[in-house]
Amino acid sequence: MSTLISLKNVDLCYASTAFKERSLKTALAKLFSVGKEKVEVQDIKALKNVSVDISSGERVGLLGHNGAGKSTFLKVVAGLYPISAGTRSVQGIVRSMFDLSLGFEPDATGRENILYRGLLLGLTPKFMRGIEDEVVAFADLGEFIDYPIKTYSAGMLVRLAFAITTAVGGDVLLLDEVIGAGDANFMVKAKQRIRELIENSEVLLLASHDFVTLRATCERGLVFHHGELRFDGPMEESITTYKRLNGLA
Image (cartoon, rainbow, N blue to C red; front, side, top):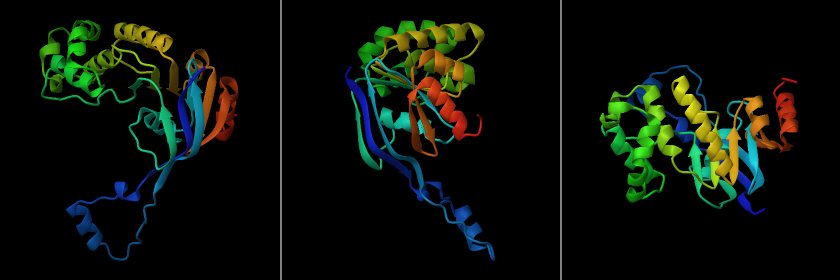
């Protein structure tokens, strides 16, 4: 099996300046705050010295408390977050499904946004025109497909985003929780589409708190705790480690 994902001694830090208010209102409030102790905001280390290799054919579940580093790890693999230290190597086409609303233009129609989202995913206009009918049929929005998406409900927007994102597969599939995508009928289609994507992908990374889904889908688990990779091994042992680290055992 070939290694598709390799992270070596990876750190990722968020600078404290990203969390500081810089508005005029905040500045004036600070100016007239007399006698109040100043709270210093520290840099946040979201990932700490993470090293892992993932090979073709693996189905890997990510476990950890909220803020443990699971989603950050996925976004590092996707190339959305620049690492602060270490090395990152990812081979193949990556398809991520954890920010479905990314790349939509509110004033454009659903049909126009199919093209815009495709371009964001690195696909050509010709390719997107070729799959447009399939995306429209899967989203099942009726006449609303030609309305501006700012008129859509949250459920309609998720259905369109899901239909576009899952219309094409990839070598590396990244999932952050199981996606809820609308009414019961659509959920049946959505779950079937996800199963097909998983079957056709070389590598799956699934971040979830659902032990049933993790056991059914993944053989290997990565347990994150306060930004550190604390365990890498069989899924059942990963669940046990997660429970122990979080006082659930």
